[in-house]
Length: 317
Image (tube, rainbow, N blue to C red; front, side):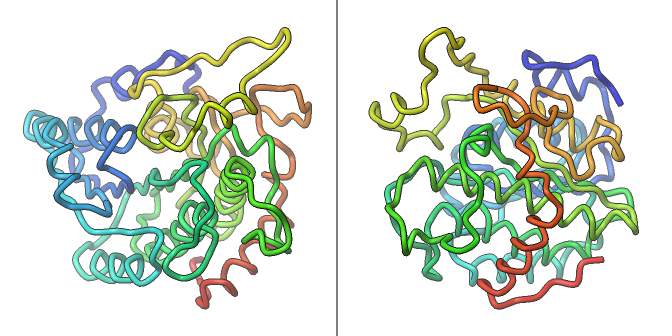
């Protein structure tokens, strides 16, 4: 596994002159920020990239650079409708993709919402858990039959998982007060646990699954981070300030885990700054992954609970 990359590496640093011709990649959330950069970097190297978005018109206007990169590098880029806050939309999208794709080499589950006001999805789930976890849970699991034997799946998590474990008994805050960042942290822990459970199911036939933390990036996703919310999570005392990444640096770990890193090394793991994160339960740590996020039993419990919530079972092995 390559160890030459780090927090300052960009997508172009990581991918270099890799040729992805003949590879099919699905990236969710390609209408802004990390999703656009991820799609650009992959299409520039010859991949066929399909981007899932809620608003096709907005995404088309925002992705001119992706189409230009695809033309330059011999790849392609197409958009499809996907609203992760609606399981009907998710199922329609996966039905369409299964009908027109022979196989998929990489899925990057990049889309998501962050610290938004309390609300519910079209199916009645708390917005962040429903969008960030359940939407991708159904989307990715329904596409597993398309995965090539050497395929990879990358689920975007966040360092926010270090603050909050999932609450399997109250995922929708029915019995507790809602807090935007608590809900976000729980949903990001769920993303890691999904990676752990899915990797355990798929690795026997070849595909591997990783979770990644992109870092701290100022993108459209953070539009709900009010000064009050920021004050609650900003470091204090002698802790170092956050180091903000560029979009290219933020998307680098996704393409590193999805293309460059050793498959066995990242399977079932949580990655940050283009390396596999170390396990730490130090509450003061600003890096690493919490033990509860990699716990296999907890991952299985979340899988079972998620299947019950969405009303669908997945035999993905």
